[in-house]
Length: 271
Length: 335
Image 1: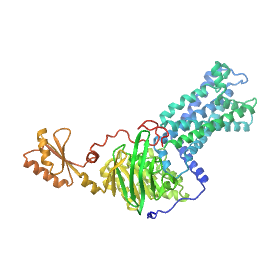
Image 2: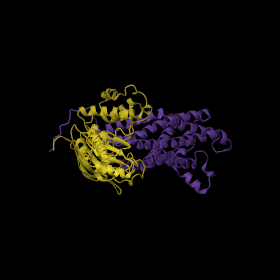
Image 3: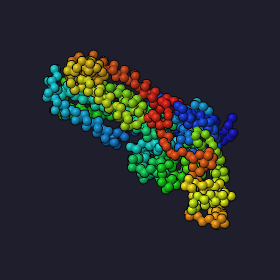
Image 4: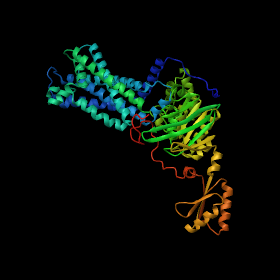
């Protein structure tokens, strides 16, 4: 057979199990994504300014003319909608980030490295989870400032936050697929924004669905945003909790189950 | 065959109906440099992508240090470094952060990651800019960082895809100096380029590739003898004079009249001597040139000689993998 004499290049690698490396690589990517997030203030600012504007607009401009039975203070009805909206639009950044990595040749470099194949997607979704947490905390604070109050205990609040993070996680997989499929940041944004807008506005985020015309109402009442908003509202205000929470969990689980494998497959296919 | 770091046999790759790589075979002995020379669309980048396990070949096989790229990609990835056409560094991170990230992703021992980053920053003259974000770097600095990132895990085999495209002459020279040092350290290098000068400067052997096929191979000396190293251009007063000049100068080297109808280009190997001969020949034929110039052969000249047609104008460069659909007839999922 052939013998190869290669110069003495020392082996400087650490030895760990494959799973340990998968985790380590994912965290390295997540770390890098988060640094970028804080260094590019526009994404963070855009994710927070827009919802703040919506809060102010719906709370003060429209709020007076919107009556929701069971909610003496519209702001208590509104805030869960705003939270879920924020998380949903924020997930667009997952897609844009991946599209940018693709177009700038970073994915290509990653492919030539002996790193875990799952790390890029896992790292991206982890980073977005952290981002969502920060943004939710910010939004809750803003909510308190405009009169929002939690009418249950801290546990319910934590459960609500957990539910929103799970939903954001689910949506990032949808956006990941779009980002990978379009391959550049502008196309990713163009493709995701209308989709998200339709989802968010044709829901009960801002108004009760019973005021919507027939077919729209049917759609609005049976989509994931409405389910999640219902659950968060129930947790933070009043009413039965078990059913809406289960519905929200089921939606998030289903979205992940469908879109995560699709996104992974698309990632692998981009060669 | 002994001491072969890279062995490629009859490699083939197509994207839909476009055949990007059509039966390429090559061998690169350990510690040497192979230059793949060809225009855009020749198949250089696709070949590199296959060898660096980014793409799977449709036919043929390739081994790097005896690891098959299709069957054992993990082992291949540990031994290779790639600095692609686009400086694949994260703009939002600093130079140091970029190198540390690659250190983590290449599973370097944690204690070594920091020092290795420092060492590379020093070596590539980026120490001063190490803690600034890459967004603030010049093109040359990005390329150097890209190269440094490819070397973090000390790969014995390095792939450089058009390393100096887009750099100014100073940046190009700097990078050549760095690359020469790496080679002196014993690294095996496969580099692709459009520039004959770059191939000459850096490569031990050059392989000319076009349309996915190897069309010539040899050391730069061997190719120069085949292609001629210099072009002497002489502009005459009119077409008739040019035609006369052409027949006289044909004895010195391959002579042809260019598109403008008045300029004769002679391909020679020894510029100095050839100029004297050209002058004497024209003088003897009572032809006074309006203008005379000596220039390096362009890739067009090389290709004209080897293939009988000009290298195509740079249409689209090979995009990074999967940068959207379209481009050059690639179908989704074609692998």
